[in-house]
Length: 452
Ligand SMILES: Nc1nc2c(ncn2[C@@H]2O[C@H](COP(=O)(O)OP(=O)(O)OP(=O)(O)O)[C@@H](O)[C@H]2O)c(=O)[nH]1
Ligand SMILES: [Mg+2]
Image (cartoon, rainbow, N blue to C red):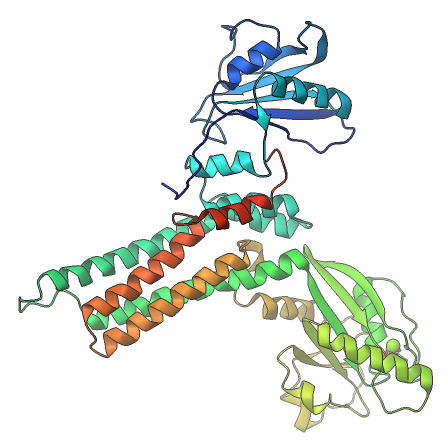
């Protein structure tokens, strides 16, 4: 049972669709006695015999004088077989904000109270219909701006994270069981807890936790997009690359060095991942005031980038400033590969990719490498939409496990090892919400809209 102090199941009601004109609109109610409440709203003295769970009823909602407020479809659900785990009704009416408000007010007048943000989903969580990570994925699914982000949230909703965590938790429970047995039979000669085996198992579990953490990093980019800044010397072909990726001649391209002054900014889509692409002024020493300002702005943009594409091209192959050479966001790209000039030997080892911005050669590959680099080992087509909260607890679990392994190798007492295993288990339980305080739940469900 999730930790929870308020276990109310009083009837709540809310509009479940956005308050605006639409073809249809939904008002829902959940909690004790909502079937009776809905029956009264339809002008019946009691629940009609024809009403059965999950069967649509054509109904008219009426005010206290019996006048019709709206006509629509009522879908009744019986707890625990509903999304909240309680009795639930959904009225699907005309998408008129005015009529839907009248229906909602009628439900409230008959005894329901207005639902708080996320209260329907929160009840589903409390009643064990979904774990906390699944509930969070509902909120991030609603927030998703791209198909890729939506799909990654859906994978969590379908139990993709929960299942993996359960497997890790089972291994930890097994290990804890052995440690505790060893403690109970400390007098015996036969060792039950095999330390070498434990250290090897922990290494495997740490790998699994790391793979999950990578999903959290990848989720950030799937949701917020990747910010790619193209930089480099003048004439390196930055604007040509920008145009190629955009599929249109947006930036002016010319053989005159210093063509781009203001930076150009465009949103593109790389297989469902939103990318903000920025073309900047070529970096060189100049006394010209406008170009100088362009370069200052380009440098400011470099600071914000997730990926810094530094273009080098013949004849000069100008490398970035010292401070960017070690920047892990930097990718050194050799452009104009179509021109028959060899890449200097001193450079070739540092170059990530060779492309031709003019012909488009190597651009798809470069795009894939950028995504791969940010997503780590995660195949973003299978990625799980994790939250930063999950990453934090995964990290806590990994740290506790790391300590347990060190202790085991150092022949420390079983008691100390058990403490760390329990700490790892607790951290994982916070993700699924088996242990979660009201403050955490309030923060999470407060993110939801009313009616969800
Ligand atoms: N052969 C060849 N020429 C290229 C390639 N990319 C760019 N160019 C040429 O190089 C010149 C400079 O290209 P731009 O895209 O304007 O270069 P830039 O880096 O934006 O230059 P600035 O805005 O001045 O900093 C143009 O004449 C382009 O046609 C390439 O891959 N191959
Ligand atoms: Mg340019």
